[in-house]
Image (cartoon, rainbow, N blue to C red; front, side, top):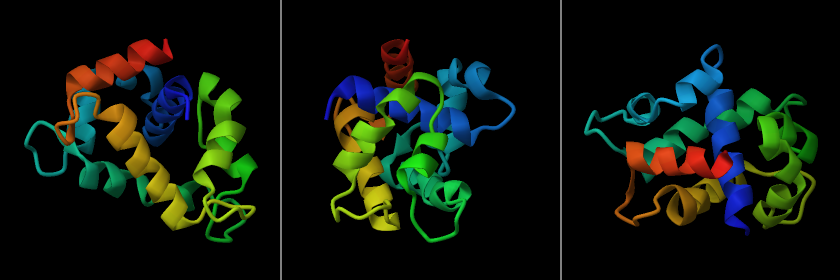
Length: 138
């Protein structure tokens, strides 16, 4: 997958998760990491990232079928990331169905974390890495 598309999707998902704070929140890398960092070690690991993502499927599953169709997935994104929704959806949909299952949704987010969010491959998202994501989403 193109990293630009992944980056925009990541930014959109984080922004959508913080109602009322949106772009101002996202511009504060330390706040984003602290928001995701449940064990207070100053970093966000894969488990914390997926813990954050897990309930988001239900949040955007408007028809209550347990998965996200393309329209629901698109609505979970913000700004420019909506333009890449079909591309991201197609590549995340390993089972080839009409929806992203919970497993596919979390698998997609694990892939994004490992291949895009954690740019230095140390197993964590730091404030610096979040800054890089924001710069790429630009």
